[in-house]
Amino acid sequence: MTDATTDTLDEYSEVQALLTRSGFGSLAGQADVRKLPGRNHNWIGTTDTGERVFVKKLEGPTEASAARIRQCVTFDRILRSGSASELLSPRLLATDAEASVLVFACVDESRTAAEVAREERLTSDLAYSLGHTVGLLHNLPVEEIVNDKGASPLLPSEELLEALPIALFEASSAAELQAWSILQNDVALGEALRQLLHQERLADRVAAHCDLRLDQFLVVDGAVDGTVYLTDFEEFQAGDAARDLGGVVGDLLHRALLDAATSDGAASESPSHARMLAQLTDGIGSVRPRITAFWSGYRDTRPSGDSHLAERVAAFAGWHLLDRLLAGARTAPRLAALPRAMAGIGRKALLTPEAFIPTLGLLEAHA
Image (cartoon, rainbow, N blue to C red; front, top):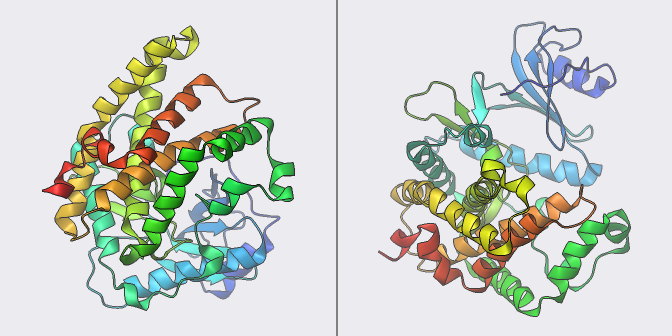
């Protein structure tokens, strides 16, 4: 894991209290405590009893955070219940639902798969290991999972395709409102998203992560076999395998498209529309072998009789590009040409997912 700025934790007494009463000692005043980046408050360090821990304090309403903690507890219980799974995930050591705090055993000398990808070290062999890891997750016993509405994925949302709640409207940037206007006024896209959500509801249930991206994989540094841990199970539930798979494929695709379009100073040259499309096409071609390896790792671990799985994976990958458009709009004054072009590729994947199966290298699904 990558260290960020130091943090004394002085203003988070609830974190110290949970660590102390759980028997793990205190992080207060420890020299190696580091605050890590993320949408929540995250720290890593060694307590005064020598325990290496990763601590997360969830943001948001207490009720929603409590639901997310319950899903983490459910996942950890199922994984440790003797199911003989090879799946690796940091052990959950302690929780406090009222304080929105979780404590995990630390996985040292590791970095996220997103960091590995940024360093251009995400090989096909590692991509295969990521797919294998997702397959192990989906092989866990699904019948033991009780879905918690408070932890259900928010997007894509049929309701938000119709209108934004006033609170969300007032909190949105001008670029976000522009993005939502595009989504809400695109009739064909709206129908494709509704159809995908309908198909998701009909799909066989698996033990699903439901918020899966490259950031949720920890890759142990120097591991020849690509040792991978899976993290962040706050939205864990019985769900469609395609949401998890599409999230990873979409993330791989998004990063490759971004790299291709901004390489060799392309971002500062304001390339023509034709040039940008050529760069994005090159990006798809460059990432296809890793997507195929990821897909093969999954299929070899969890063969499925679901003949439409690859189509839904392609559609969810397309949604990921639209989701990245919304995410980027939160901090942008307006929608730029590049994210809109990438979102256009996502739209095509949603409208014609069957055509994107060979484009993304998911052909084994029809073997």
